[in-house]
Length: 211
Image (cartoon, rainbow, N blue to C red; front, side, top):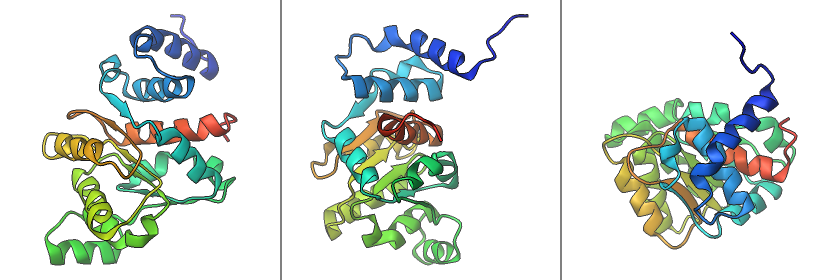
């Protein structure tokens, strides 16, 4: 059986297959790249009309990375997937506290999820940073509370938690707020791989060397 083996050829062919599904969305060049990578990561063209990008998200996220901003994630799967070598060139690091002792203690004490507790502990460190939530709606709800009640101002939020309890609601709340540029996916779709795809797409828009 013949099949493609070259990574670049596989990726290029994937983008060719995706292109017809987003051609009528009036996307910019950079938005097209992000949409394509998200759809590619999902293997699902039904994402095309569900992806929502705030008008300032790309510029704000790129500027944050270029000035060495850190990235804070809700789960290890997101942290692991981000191209940390590419990010390090600009001085940024990726942080996740979901498995830390103080996070577990706070979650137990307050009867909340560990991802939510982690964002609460990050607190002021989220100012000027990029937040990538791919799994836990509670983490996104907590970030939005910090923005609303404690004037925490991240540079950008990637909010794509997945699931049937809270995910759609948390993303709808993200899309309603006016303070922070964001990218999200409407409804129950999302996940760690989607958050990673969106973040890495921004890195590749800055430098497409992939290393």
